[in-house]
Length: 362
Image (cartoon, rainbow, N blue to C red; front, side, top):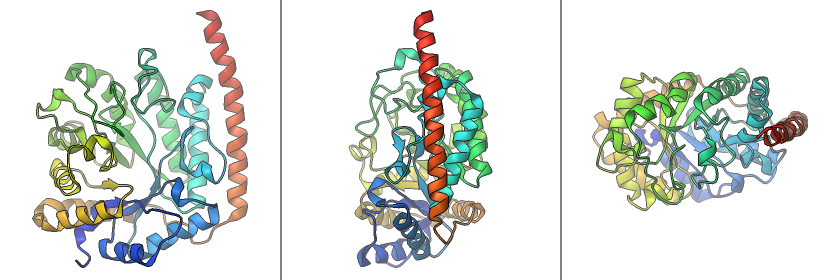
């Protein structure tokens, strides 16, 4: 099948550090709205910059170029350079200005390799009673409650935006009270609307409105619909809650549609149709190129009225993203990574001291 306009709703992953002719032809056929990268795509920074540039050129239009570069264990670029401090490290240090510095450093390091949108900040929180629960959030949150997360996430986001990189709030409407990791299976968040609106949604209202994009997570929220659909495929949540009730106007995307929470229940075609009908504008398909083709074919079979508004929104969004740098600057890459390494050590030293004080006083 030739290129179809609805391919623009897909942000796709590629399997390795370079493209072969089959992948090049696939990208030309799909003409995706963007690309998401993982450590499998990175051998060294110059190579990775060249891969990002080639993907962008093959797509033939402005695209989203993204990674998960949160800090700590979720820092894709660290395979080629320094690892930034985690959200938990920064929270223990407790300095709001350091979240802003973290954001600026993140924006700079992403810019050097040609990326324009980060899948961060995490807007979930980590109350002490939830520590140790395997819900994917270990070490990633900026505080134990919304009041701690809001100023810190805002500072990080604004720091990153100052460097020309957009931010994606996640994981709407909140992974904090998930009991299992959605990478493996579908969590259930059996809380009342009143509790969710007062706690989880507080951060998304305050900081999410400033994010260029919002990622909707894969968890069941019976408070919005009794059919057991994941939030990412649930129109009551994506359109009703996020867009209509909360008035969010940025780009709305799914979490990875190949995660177990989705793949264990739906095929690629069905999850694609459900996501678009729920109101999603970007479909993340991170690993298998065959799933990308299936999704594109499913989109092509849908009535144009169901996908056309999302395509127009993605095109307008991509036009506003900062133009990636054409030439890799090895000196800039070295400099910003040295600064990240020094920053991590500063944060770690203060954080250890604060944690000792906390333990001593309890």
